[in-house]
Amino acid sequence: MLNNPFGLFSDIVIRFIYPMEYTKTWGVTVLMGIMLNFMYFTFRWAGTGNEKVMQPENKPLHELEQF
Image (cartoon, rainbow, N blue to C red; front, side):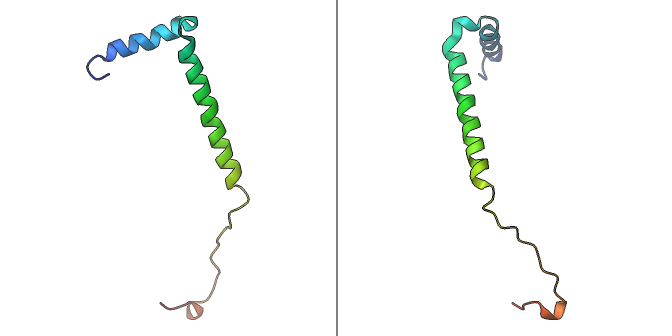
């Protein structure tokens, strides 16, 4: 990759030009995209509604706790 970046670029371009020749590459790409989306929406769904919003109370300075 560092020694021959143009070889990597040509491999990527060839896979776009001839997608039916590289079905495994596209299959892995699609499955990885589905898995990442599934993980994202799972964590997003799991995180909603369970959080408590902490808002500071407006107290005068003489009522604040001292450490």
